[in-house]
Image (tube, rainbow, N blue to C red; front, side):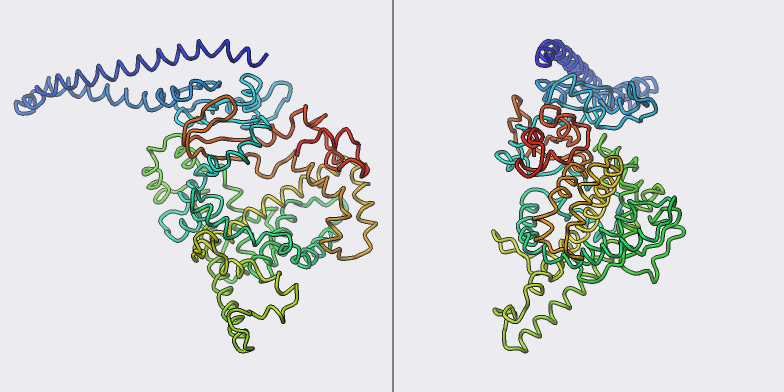
Length: 552
């Protein structure tokens, strides 16, 4: 039925867009011809100072200027390139973003529309693959088809490995500080092409399970601190559980990355707010862990409210102007974000210096023991010492196997701060949603408590957790299904590529909205219900219907 509606609507949309383009081209050509005809007379008008002729020329210039603005906002050539893909045209300049202005959703009084709600409406109208005009000059291809998503992530990955330039807004906020800008743009989330592939290849061995499993003592220590904080909470007391999980997560990640205890769980709050206030937040004498935690909280608190970032997406031609405004007339959010970026950059630089000093000391000890460069003391190292070396020190030795290139200092700082910032917010949000969902589901909570109570160890090992905490893992998977930490997977076409039945031009953003993909009823019966049993394999206590129908 959806396909029939697409076929019926497409011819009229095509005819309308063709007429629109022909009209705009004819108007532009007429203006150019008229200007050429007047060009010969212009010199004489200037020489004779003919006020009448100058007025005519001024009117012509004004008409061409207005026509150029209208043409730019309408982007007819851009729309023509994507005319074969179903989707709404939207309004001038804004495209389909205007729909976000609708304040309420039908039958959900008081619920504010968000982007995924707009995508859901377009999916019902146009099918599982459609274009969405994120501004008239930026069409995005939205994919909610599991088979096509799998194809994008595997067989066609080389043609869609780049990500949209989402780092531009943060680089815009960094201002003129070249080091701060580079330490954003060289982060793994923002790199593109061969640079991304090289950094990824260098870092991939650091995240092997054999390496990460040896950070379990760090996790157990942070968990004990969190439990003590929760035990101090009085009955009826309101706490910000997201902030608690944020400090807990950053303590684990920061300690693992930098090799220095990150006491992030002791960061004091001000009415639940831990972000940086440029007017009142002084960083002098503040522990590094507190600096980093406040900086991360600030960046995520201001990540979607910068008008300059939105305008840079809608009108890329305005980017130089927006850079000037952001530098000399920044908004309050931009000032906070800039300070947070600088704080993260300073912490990363200080930790890099400590990692280099530790590496030199380690090499000196190895040389003193007669082991030299080749031995590196591995025979005398315990398994824990070998694998639990801080990730920052490991990154100093990491290199791209294809090119043999080591990461630069700014690349190392960019990756370390990316791990902490990205890992803190995503993990804290997932744990917060998991607690909320379990509080609404007594049966699932009881199943988790059975696994916890059956654990014979106060500090379970990595192997025990992976083998015996199956329901806990399933609850986390189900939480991520309902509340994915990223929300969207974004890719950028490196060349023309076939996506489903449509050929998509190069340099096109391709968006996979995880919330829609992971609530498809044909793959997840009762898709909005919290049922961890979906992710437990058959024969291990799960309802086989859910395990069979789950789409992982």
